[in-house]
Image (cartoon, rainbow, N blue to C red; front, side, top):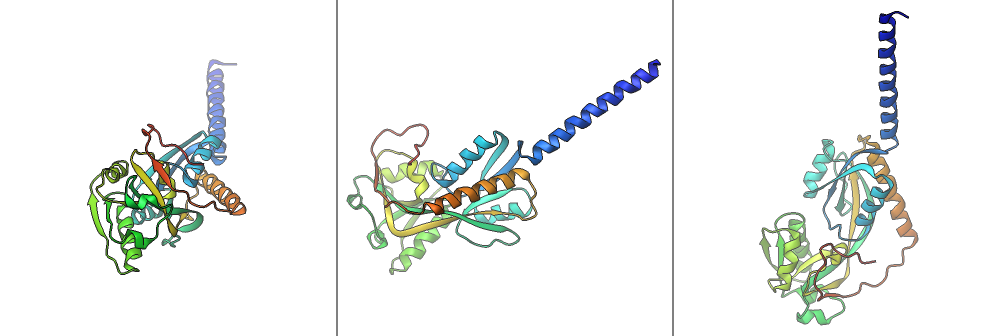
Length: 263
């Protein structure tokens, strides 16, 4: 074989190897062996369904990069429509424009109060018990939604709550409750966040539904795998739908660096 022929053969083999590598990479992406999925969140991942879903998905697809973005629901829905976000897990069952919505799970609502507060002596609370209390929320994250939630619930009993807004993160809001600056409310998943001096008390009859939201135009294979897993987990929970009574939770120990799961 001539020198030119040998050179051509080497180049042809290299092109073939590159093609085979590219084909394997495409096939791997389609199988969701690796890739990237951007997920919007609006609730705590200290424990509960969403924490379990993300953990199991990471175990099943260790080469898929998971990016979490916390923002308000309207901005997350807008990002989904622009394909800047693959999916979001939001409170409620609202039908967002140009998006698909899948109800997945629900969580009970807890009042957070100092452990020596008079109401901490009760195993569970009703809204009438909270009518004269001062509340605190944070400006970012779900703060506005919590504000509207408190106003709506207490207005039904003829009360208008006193609500103070703090420009701090969620992780610093709960210690302020322990310092007796006011009460707040959280979903059940957040009760795994252990801060000293706090008591979590379930509010009778209060349940928050959570849904997955995504664009039907999104063909990211990693998203499809995530939604399939979420459906399966939700179905298993519905099959085992006996809900244990909400238990009061007191936290007097020194908190760990990572929140404990309540299971």
